Length: 410
Image (cartoon, rainbow, N blue to C red):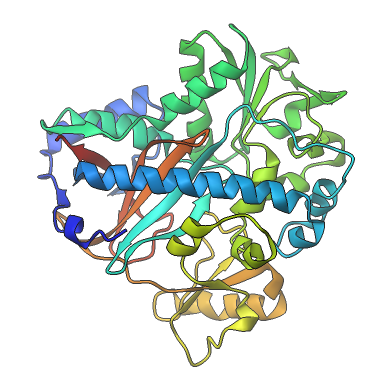
C-alpha cells in the first residue's frame, strides 16, 4: 500500500483557457444536470485535471473492491445481532425494524458505494465509506469525460453513472418503471436523480422523479402515486438519507426500505449499518474479516474513550455525518462551531465518534497547494470510477472543489 513512489508521479494538467472551460461548464449545466457548477462568483469545478498513474488506479480499484466485500459480510453479521445495531447511533425506530427476526432485509436493485481515499506519508487512508446514498455521479462521469478530451494520453477510470444504470436495468424488465427518490428542496440531490433518470430513459426505462411520500406500498410492493404516473414500480432508487426516513409520516410505511419489500431497492436500507461512522466500534464483536478496513480506516473510538482534552490529534464526527458537515477539530474548525459541537458530544456521546487525525499529502496545483480526496465507487462490488475533490485545507467537506481525475495511458 506504499504510494510514496507513485505520489510524486501525480500531476495536475495545465489550466484550461477561460473560453474552453466555460463551454464545459455550460454543457454540464444544460446537458448533464450539473446545476451548481458555480455558486455566486465561485466555480465548484477545477479548470484543470488531476492525472494519476495507471498503477495507482489499479491499486485503488482493488482496495475498494476488498472494502466492499468485507463490509457486505459484516453487514449480514450485524443484521443478526440487534445488540450491535444499538451501538451504531441508528435511530431507535430503525434498530427496532431491523431487529425483527421474522423478516428479511429488502432486496437490492443494485448496491453502489463510494470510498473516500486520502494519500498520506504512511500510505492510503480512508476517512469514511459513503454506503447509503453516495453522490458525485455527474462530476465523476460527465465532467471527467469532457476533461479527458482536452488532454491526450489520458483515459477515464470508469463511468460510475453508466455502471449504476446498467446494473439497475438488469434488475427491471424492458420498459420497466422505476422511481428515483430525493428530498424536496434539495437541488444538489435532485440534479443527481434527474441525471440518472435521463440515463435510464435512454435505455428504454420509464423513470420518474419522486419523493418518499409519493411511494405507496401494497403487500410489500411499491407503487408511485403522482400526477405523472400512478401504478406499480419495478424498482426504487433511493437518493434520500436512510436516517431521514424516520421523520416521514407513519402512513408512508418507510419500513419497507429496510425489510420485507417485494420491490428491489437501490440502496436497501440495511446498508445504513456500514454507513454509520460508529461501524468500527463493533469490529471486535463480529467474526467478519476486516483486514482492509483495519489497515485503511483512521483509528476510531467512542469519544468517551480518548483523552481529547490534552491530545489534540482527534477530530469528531456524528454517526451519520454527511458531506463533512459535522467534522470538528480544534484549530481547523471555526471556534464558534467547535464549542457547541463539544457540548453535543458530552450530552449525547452515543451519536459521535473520535477519529485520529491523519495528515493528507499536499498537492501542487495551478490554484496553489491543495489537498486531494479520491472517491472510488463500486457498483455491485466492482470498481466503477473516481470522484475527485480538492480543498485548500486537509478537510474535505461541502466547500471542496470538484476535480476531474484522469488516468495516464500506459
